Image (cartoon, rainbow, N blue to C red; front, side):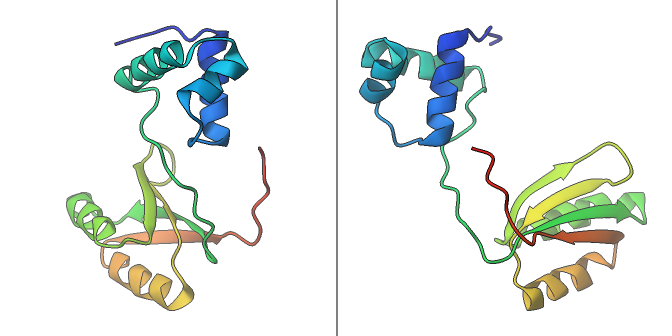
Length: 137
């Protein structure tokens, strides 16, 4: 389903991004609609794939951005299998550009070392460690 977002949809998305626990009624008050109308719009946004899921943002002590550069075309399956085994991997994307994959993770240093040792069987890597998060919202 392909829908065009209007200013109300955009405001609903912004409110949910700030606090996904808001009720439809609370959102409705902010966008001057009924809770039922907001619920219908949210259902449309979910059906269209614009809202993927509701999540909780956890502040981990460690956070990394890991780029993977494959050594061998046959290793893609192995790398994807390995990544799925670690709960510390928050997101993994197959990307276009210099790297083949981009991983967002929250390993502590010993766990990161173990993960990298496993990965190094199939690829080269670059690890960027977050020193401080800059709040944007």
